[in-house]
Image (cartoon, rainbow, N blue to C red):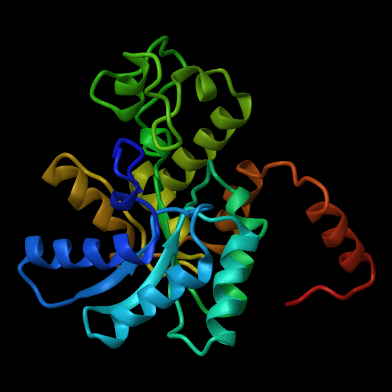
Length: 267
């Protein structure tokens, strides 16, 4: 969905827009089908059944192999799964969501839904604009200009989830504690901080792949090094989990605590 488009038929998840969009995409890509077609965001203005049927028709027509979601809440994702199952439609197979050592909220519902319903999680912004790549040091008073954070700091209104404001983490003691753990683990393995951050994601059971963004061949080669046959130890995973932990709000904390006390947690 592109909010800059003025024509209501040129955005959103209506059947009209979905059918027109896929034809345009196939034409530009010069292909007959795409392997994975994902909605970018939930659309409050369109009945979910209309969206599900339109995407299912694309799969049946052979224009799309598989369908997935991105940027949805837990209840929205579960509704997509449940209604699709009830209507006998092709199963959605992926969720593209922000997930990293600096974005653990995804675990409260979305990760568990992916695990229970068999969806592969595709994390975006895995390095949080460079914060999880070792690009920043505590003595910096401004971000490097060649980073997403630097770009976001140049102009009001640019701050987004994938390139947050510099002060958001520069003044965070928890971040610097996490950064210290990352650098220590990286040194133990002879790897870069970015590789450790990506490796942490790759060892999560629901993660199928990680969406990276690079500007140079060197960055690409470094990122790819996160998957070249090495692993973090369980202790290192636990240390990174602890260093990046966020406070769990109600009702998630209460449900977790009640089940733990009763010995009824899932393995």
